[in-house]
Length: 84
Image 1: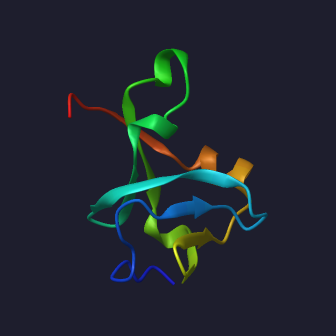
Image 2: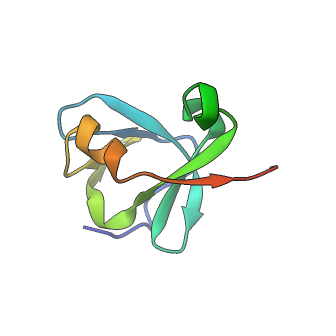
Image 3: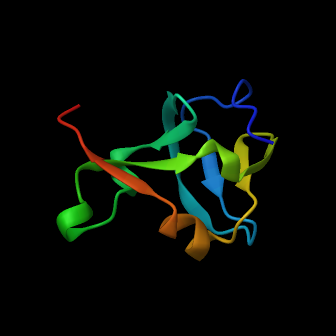
């Protein structure tokens, strides 16, 4: 799909398997920026993670469903250390 125009802040991002991947913080270019609270623990804590928009299968209600299962989608995440 890759159409990010329907995606809004605070929408839930789920994998094709229905498992929670993250929460939308915003759209930056061709990526979904996830909130820091979904960034995990340890060295991942406090970093924004990004999911490529190419993984979007559909936007349904208040959820962004990805074309990949959650475990695969997480492997596509990009990480960015960000003070905001």
